[in-house]
Amino acid sequence: MYFDPLYLLFALPALLLGLFAQARVKSNFNKYSRVATMRGVTGAQVARALLDSFGLRDVKVEAARGFLTDHYDPRSKTLRLSEATYASPSIAAVGVAAHEMGHALQHSQNYAPLALRSAIVPAAQFGSGLGPWLLFGGMILNIGALAWAGIALYAAATAFTLVTLPVEIDASKRAKALLVRQGYLNQQELVGVNKVLDAAALTYVAAAVQSILTLLYFVLRLSGGQRD
Image (cartoon, rainbow, N blue to C red):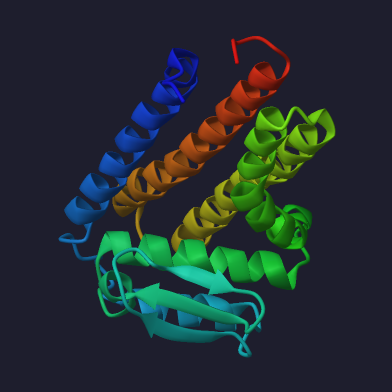
């Protein structure tokens, strides 16, 4: 075994981008979680009101433990908001809650990228875990078919990160428009929501970049671009 400098060349840019994105998310969320909206409504109240305005009364809104664990579960039609979002009337909380509501709206309208992402979840989870093991196992055992199967599996995980991008960007776009249109935020408050949601979107960009560069590294290694 040895350290491959080529891997560092591929991994470092994505790592730095990921760290930068995470820092921006925490910084912007912490900043705007201390700024209350003029309306004074909580994240949970905004999410419930927006859902009801589209007739999505069958979608539940629940509190969830953890920091920024907000998500929409399409299987149970449940929108789960973290502790910092659910009961907070802050600009950050309202923005995050509206974003997650955007996913529920995508689900109700059969938004194609969301349906595609949901369909490839099993393959992505399987590929990200098993793919690298098959790749390196195939290289060690000199079984090319096994190694390429590993790359194919990992490619499914990469595809998931790419499909995730339009899903997340669209949810944020819907959230921003609805918050202003329905009078929950004014244009000045929307500046804070933009910073919070745009920083969150950057984390998904970083994940996609990391997965793409890792996939390229795997292909290069298997193709003989680096010594064994």
